[in-house]
Amino acid sequence: MVKPAKLDDVAKLAGVSKNTASRVLNHRGYLSQKTIDKVHAAMAELNYRPNVIARQLYRQQTGLVGLVFPTVNNPFFAELEAALEKALYNHGFRAVMGNSENNAKKEEQYLQLLLDHQIDGLIVGSHNTNIQGYHSTNLPIISIERIVSNQIPVVASDNYQGGLLATQRLLDAGCQHIIHTNYPQTFTSPNYDRQAAYEDQMRKHGLTPITYSIPFDEPESTKLQKIRQIFIDHPEIDGLFADNDTNARLTITAAATFGKHCPADLKVIGYDGATITRLLFPELTTIQQPISEMATTAVNLLIQRLNGHSVSSATLPVKLISGTTA
Figure (tube, one colour):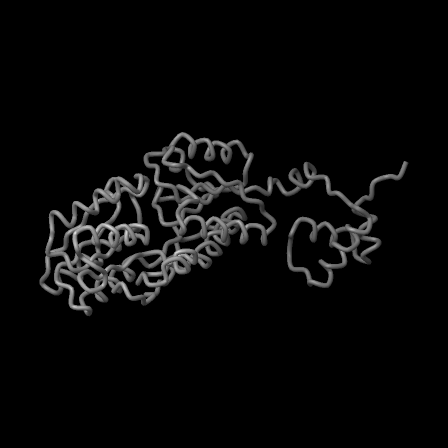
């Protein structure tokens, strides 16, 4: 019987020390690409299979990170989760994805996996509230666009600047009756900075800000009904700053049923600017979040936290993508 190859055999064939081969295997320290390639080639030639359990014990890590977000059916979250998975893989981690679907119990189960050391960390951005486990100190958790506790760093786009850019664009287009949509105030999110900027800019120009609450997790039919109500309550509306691109699209749909066509009668600006949205709805004017950079930043902060370092929240710049809707 042929004995399975050992790490010593890999190191000998690659012409490196056993310690160097181990560092390649465990993604530890700086190594040249040439060295990494030699070790991987030796592993392939010898059909070497590392002892996963031993590696986990040695590293005191599982190599797994949980991702908990509302849904992959939304373009922003779909692109974000894909970018997070890629960034984690590049650092030697695998992603365990758990779409919370507005289910707090499901999110709590992922948190318990972390507390039981079955995963190494969590990156979260779901919309559930009052989950007490997040208030433990020094947990390896990073949040994206959501405030879960004072102890957990948040990676967010510059929501206030995004709100300013959107509102000013509508004002520059001549709009005088601008309405905003956002999450209900029961949910703690940097999203409200968009609303704060909208309100500040409206008041600065002597206009009255009006915000309609539209929960993210509601069915599109319910959202559409609430957006239709805006046109019933405010037939004078000539501009709308939506808190996401989905609501922007629904606004344009609702407006048409009231004889308002975009952009002649109504100017609309969205928020998110995910790649798939830009491909399917290129005419939409929107505030684009740097999704790939947000994912990379979140993963880097999580790894620093896993290594025992103190980390701070991060805010990344946004930009206005011009279309024909505003």
